[in-house]
Image 1 (cartoon, rainbow, N blue to C red):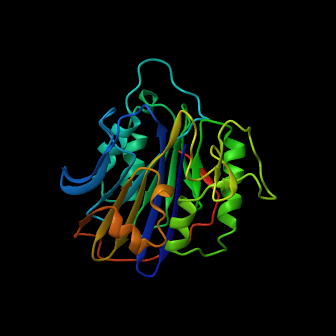
Image 2: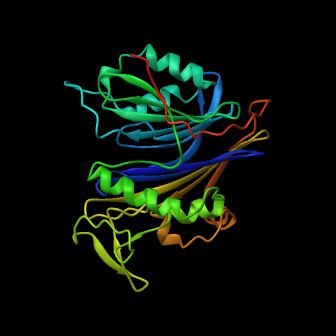
Length: 281
């Protein structure tokens, strides 16, 4: 499970990413500046796979990787999807990403959705379902889940809708720290296995954006902000709900922060409300 949301405004774009992982998985290394080919990249590193799930480079391009559990897993020994993101992270444009994936033998990888963000094009998704690579026109937020995807997706979309049509950065931070209450009128409780009491409410852990199950939980929160001047990666190790953050400024005071200072020259913000898809292979 993971959840990503974003906003685009006159200054650039911002990403918000909850990474949900097995509790047994090793703790990730905080974002560090890596020299990848001809550009610098900020990304956290997963010690188990050696790759990453989110990155931003000094050309202003960001990548987010979501596992696509509803796809068909290819047979045989597979390579790490996190290593694939790492290998793509230095490319400067969305067309470069699309071309590289189109020329890659994706049957080496389990299904995934790769989200791409730049200053001069609308956000884009590339989905490998185990047999076909498809270009998606995406809409915030997006989520992945290995458990009861339809129920998880519906619950998180309903919570997001409560933010209104144009949520700001502080509202998105609150969304990524939020829990699903089973007392809400639009509840869709899967079971009582992951319920717990919090602030006088019964919380449904597996449906929550800040997810909690016995075997897995939200293990980190990433915030990327890209403007004409710089790209900034703010990384919070652990579940965001544990820090009770009230604003992006409070997040920056609490979390690990790194910046890159070379980005693209032009900025043409565009909306991303389409839901079309184009099959590549």
